[in-house]
Image 1 (cartoon, helix red, strand yellow):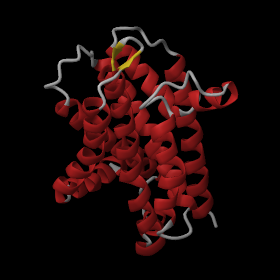
Image 2: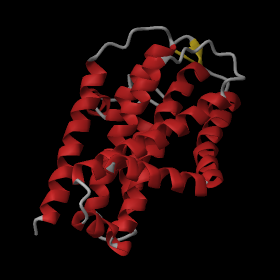
Image 3: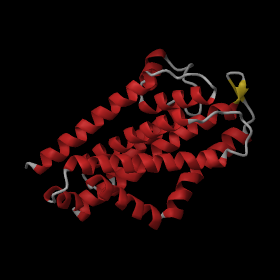
Length: 243
């Protein structure tokens, strides 16, 4: 019931701000598609650049949608509304509250990625998106919604949430195999970027879209990130409860 309650809150928020959320999910990715994909007629790895760009934008949209769905709202609720304090003194199991936030954020990220897929349906690329793609999209959304949950617990003020977006989300958006291949980067930096969660998600979604089996290595890495961030969020909230 705790998980359902949190998801219902996310659903009520989504219905209230439907047009704002939808437009925010559309504008930046659509600009990237028009400028980089349609405006710059280029190829990548012997194929149209759009075939490389679309899976990367899908992964990026999942990241930004999931992160923004949790980070800013949780920061406000914890610092100003004191809603987190109310949750901790209520009978709601805290693990259910955390799980609801993670799942709700992941669903928001999946919604953002589905918008991109709808926008690109009219473009004949031959890309494949199946249940494996959506499984990775959902897992990627869970990783970044859990990361946002941890960072919102660490935020000292409302302005920290935009800073986290500038320090973490924006660099990953451009560096993690979304707009260009990391093959030409220095080896040490390439390996570091390659192990970031968005790089793994982009690689796997791109492989599936090309009809190639992505393997399980990337899924394992995403699950490790998920487990680590979940553990941090659980430790934080239970520590705060026991103060």
